[in-house]
Image (cartoon, rainbow, N blue to C red):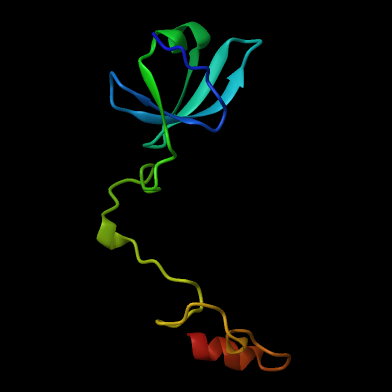
Length: 109
C-alpha cells in the first residue's frame, strides 16, 4: 500500500493506527527499518511490512512531550536559564567576572 521509501530522520503517520513515528535506521542489507514512535517506544519492521502500511509523511511534531509519561501542559515551566523575566538576551551582568564568582552564585540562589 505504501509507495513511500523510508528515509532516516523523516516522520510518518500510520493512517490505520493514527500513530506518529520517526524512521531512525534503514538497513537495506538486512531489510530492516528501525523507528521510534511519538510515545518514545522503539520498534523495527522488515521492508515488506513497510510496503503494506498505509502511511503519510508528516512534519516533526512540535510537542516534544510525547515520550514523557503523564506530562500536563502546566507541568512544564519554561525559562531561559539565568534570564530574569522580561529579559530577552544575556546581558554583561549575567556572567561573573574574575574574582566575583562566589557573589554571582549567591545572587542566583
